[in-house]
Structure formats: structure tokens, C-alpha cells
Image 1 (cartoon, rainbow, N blue to C red):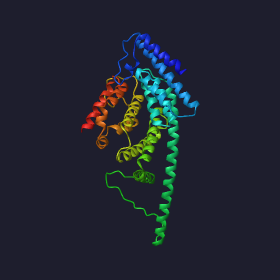
Image 2: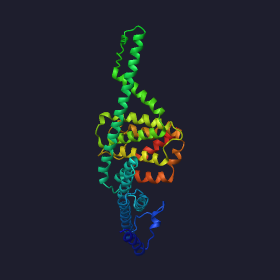
Image 3: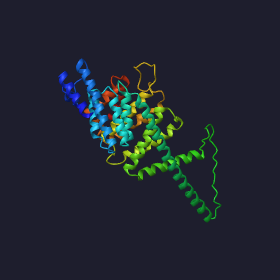
Image 4: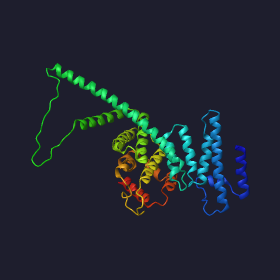
Length: 354
């Protein structure tokens, strides 16, 4: 099968007098207005996908995991026509095999944002987000249990110390009357406990290695985006988003930052996808920066991560990265001619220059 499709590619090149390598370079020639040659390139893209699938099946049959050849074929298929979402879907499948969930979500997102989207990617995204939700909830439940155990031990120590000093071990309450004309400030026990738990988690994050913090951040990040995508469980969105932001801040404290340029591009694109996916329908395209967001709290997370100047100042490379050929080419494919996103990146540039 592989030999057949390889010969078919050669036949396309000979029949239509074209060199596929010309269209596979980073600065590839546009396929627009090429007539039958353009149709031949569409056929070549499908053949590259078939070759990638065959290479992938071969690895699965042999129970090996060297999907390098398969990945190369899918990348070539993408380069021939970036507007087709199918190659991204196939790259996402390879990422799932490698258990790289963030990469898989990114490629599925690109598949859905393409001009010719591959709609089956939506179901795959839902499955990945559900797995991330279960993993997040399990980890969060375990952390809460450990925190409660520590709190009980701490309370026992305090009660024991109170008994030894001659006290009765009971808590002491102070009642303060409100001043005239001012509302009474009411702080519940649960609020205080929640604040203490958050402070405790931030302290814990400072003791973790960059690898551990990165794992926690990716889990939280995918969980938050899963809520934005499915609109399920939004009553706990704020809590999950704040937890994710704490982990992201902790991640930025490590030197060097354990996030490479490609990872920042993925986070950037996923945030854009989250905003685009929740965009108001039926409104004018020429709207202000925030007015096309149906619920600002849903995208506060997305805006915060890559628009806060303090983070960029610490990272030193994002300005150069945002102007790199790789980033520009990818963002151009995602943004297209969107007025909202041109406005967004103009504002982002202003923030970085402050």
C-alpha cells in the first residue's frame, strides 16, 4: 500500500509537471489560482494523509511507538493546504498515543479552527476534556483530604497547648460593634478556612519542582478550558481558574522558565480558541475588544495568562517570539482577517511596551 501511494505521488508530479518540495518549504507557494495543479495538490495532501495512516497502522501492528514517519507525512499534508483541518486531527491522534494531552487538545483545536474544519475533532476534544476533569477532581480531592488532615492535627496541637497552659481549650470570640453609618463586616468561618487553604496551597507550590508544577498546571489548564468548551460545571469555574493561575504564577517563578516558545504558542492559540468559541453570535464584526465576550469571567483566565506585562518582562523572549516567522505564520492561519484579533494583538503590544 505504501509503495502504491508513493508511486501515485510521482505520477502526479510527472503528469502536472510540479515539484511537491516547492510547496512543502516554509515559504511555500500559494495554491490559489493554480487550476488543475491546485487540484493535484489537494490529491497529494490526501495521499500524504494515507501514507501517514499506513505508517501509523504499521507501528501499532508491530506494537512499537516510533511514529516519526507518520508525523512527517501528516506535517507535509498540512503544509500543502493549511486550510484543511484533517492533518491536524491526525497529528492530534499521535499526541494522544504519546499521552501528550495538551498537544492533542491544541491540534484538535487547530482542526476545528481551520477554514475546512474536521468536525469529528469536537467529539475527541470532549473525550479529552472529560479525562482531564476526572484527573483534576481526583487530584483536588486528594489535596483537600491531605489539607484537612493537617488542619485537624494543627487544631489538636493548639487544644493540647491550651489545656497545658491552664485553659479549657475552647476558642475565644471577640465581638466588635460596627461604627455608625458603616455596614457590618461579616466574615464566615468557611471564608477564613478557604483563604487559609489557598495560602497553604501557594506555599506548597513554592516547594515543588518545576516538573511537578508544570504537570499540575497542565491538568488545571485543560480542566478550565474543558469548562469553557462544554459550559458544564461553570459554578466551580472561578475556583478552578484561580487555582490554575496560582500554578501558572508558581511556574513563572522557576528559572529557567520550563515553558519553551512552542508551548507559549500553544497556550496563546488555545486561549484564542476559547474566546472565539464563546463569541456572541449575530453581532457586528466591528466591535470593541471586550464586547464580543459573552461572559467576561470565562475568558479572564485566557486574557490574564498572556496579557500581563509582569510575566512577559520576566520571560525576556516573548517579544522576539511573537515576531518570529513560526509564530507569525501560525497566528496568521488562526487569526485570518479578524478585526477583533487584530485589535487584541494591538492591545497586547501596548501592554508589552508599558
